[in-house]
Image (spheres, rainbow, N blue to C red):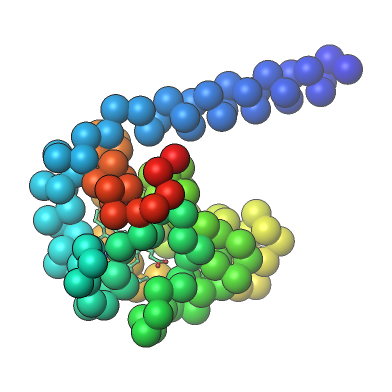
Length: 145
Ligand code: HEC
């Protein structure tokens, strides 16, 4: 009993922390942050795949599914294993995309697929910039949560 109570308390604290982490994103500032992403990504109604896939509608989209983009095996496998680009997942992914995808597959019991590397070589560590850029991405997504 004691142990399950503790686990529940920790899980509550973790989900509260995750929700807290995405408060306070500023889409206008995120548009400035997104300039770094534009080396490889386009967003908006007219966007076309470039070095990276179109990010229009990415919030709420299953990983590795934008039509016509040649994704890495690692990214495709994560999508097949059920990864969806929720705000929390994008937040956790940006500081180290490779590590995030490999951990996701390993946690799903698919360590055999957690090999190779993603083509997304960019890393964004700054927490506020991550919140802001996600707020900006959300303005191009039908999923507003
Ligand atoms: C140097 C080029 C480059 C930069 C800069 C870059 N990305 Fe990427 N990104 C990619 C590539 C290439 C992929 C495809 C990954 C794969 O196939 O492994 C990708 C994939 C993604 C995905 C997964 C998309 C999907 O459909 O599964 C997200 C989300 C993403 N990038 C967000 C961002 C954000 C936000 C930024 C800016 C903070 C950014 N990227 C900057 C190249 C880049």
